[in-house]
Image (cartoon, rainbow, N blue to C red; front, side):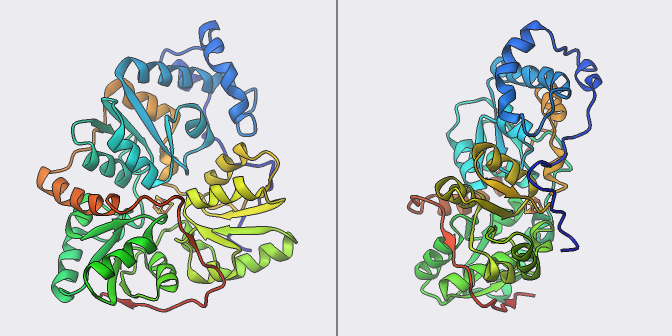
Length: 380
Ligand code: SF4
């Protein structure tokens, strides 16, 4: 259990350190108007924000919500955002597939991506006429950083007969070189679809080697992959799952498919962040562990007060770069606009559109657990 900090149900993800000066420095005060607007929202984050901290946070929340109205902006909040962002200022919440669909459907003029940079690029690809802002340009991703468009061009030269699927956790350059994208909600569906469309038994799935191994175990299709990994999920192991069971008898263990396959082998249920959230809402387990990014547990816990969450803590340092302060600042200044060369955007959109054209699933696919881990051939 060395890497897991079991912080217990009373100890959610730490809030960013902030004093009243963060709001005051921006000319914002916890005055009567702000109190009237925001105090009814406090119960949404009462397990996460203390009453003493609230006067420092409420003016930022009110400021952001006022700016959104004034500028016709929306905030797309990923499931890994801290609860203050997720519950208090997010207009649309969910996993990357849900947010991508919202980006293409919204009438707003400005999209603020409360997530990481590749997600903001995805919004821009799907909604080129909109201004897309990322509050901190350093909000990257170990998976997106693991592969480039030039790498994919080399893969295509080496394997011209196989379709290339890319997980959406990659740059626009990479999407532009691939035949179709997938998310953790629909990866098995996409791989089966493209194998049939190309009349092949072999598909290349980049850049997440663990997602690829977990999909291969579901589909029976031969998958070649790339040695990328999520720096958050790769820290979990099957041994951790066994230790959690010993420490918490009766606990239900849910895992994200970016975890290594030995984690899914030991888990009770596996799926995308939406699938994990649905599982908890529908089954109301007495005691549960979500093997994914920490803030996800905080956000699902807020919606399921009768479920006891054991919280092994692995934070994504990139997601945690997004704060109420830099969301406020980007709405004021319009800074950190995401742009993509049009030829790249058009080709990347073709890969996203190929995925979005597939029949919409009634619910995100669950991954089978208890499967023996597979080893896959790498394309390099
Ligand atoms: S949790 Fe992993 S996959 Fe998601 S943004 Fe962070 S590093 Fe990337």
